[in-house]
Image 1 (tube, rainbow, N blue to C red):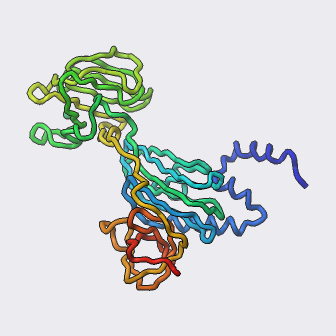
Image 2: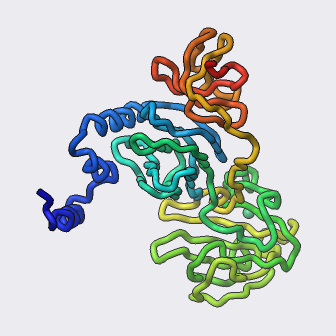
Length: 358
Ligand SMILES: [Zn+2]
């Protein structure tokens, strides 16, 4: 018998127990738990996968009803970057789970179901794992894109990555101190702009930095330091929006005898951090560079084939297959195939080493 009030009861319970997206999904399989358990077991196994990609990364392929496929990618993120993982499918009704894991693999940092995109801001530099698992019996072509964006926008108007002339950690004063920021070179008078929304905590002229502006990105947030300005265009305590002019590039303070530049620094509760990942401009990966036109997802090796940890010869060889071995195709990244061996090992293989089974 249907219980008309049950869905209401379930919602009330959910607000108390806060179930994961997977636990909610499991309810759809009350009458067929084995199907769900197999799918969840594939996920648990995949937590130990170690295929690695460098970003930006794009992969095309087809989710198949024949296997419980799970896509995992080890990636490196730096504090200041925003990770974006996106799955575009031909079928908009078929769902996909996208998760990001930190060092604690029992707890997804962020999990999404039934969205096409996940955004994740790491709080420390390190290795993370992106996991993408289509729902049970999904059957649709897909494009996976994994890439990074900077958390802030670039702090000098009209300038970009190539104008950064001096980096974090370089020696200063003959090695007595380290450079606690980056220098962005531009003509005197070029506007420096708010890299994020926030409020001004200090403007004035003092010390090595000369004319300077301090911008805070939230009440307990990070402080952004703009130094060596020729002149200042904001008042202390002003609220600013991203892109607002804060002042103009100059060479005041200890930059008197160097070409005009903005010294840009970021300070957290733990001290200065490298500001470059916060503002380094990036591109979304280009998906038009190759086509996925495999019809069958079972392939055979043409010859002895090296398996790689990632999609290029610069990644470690993690195994080898002999000729005529059967492999399962997960997807394709340019000339590299993302595959599973008969033993369940995931790896990348150059496409010239595999053929379709006729
Ligand atoms: Zn500097």
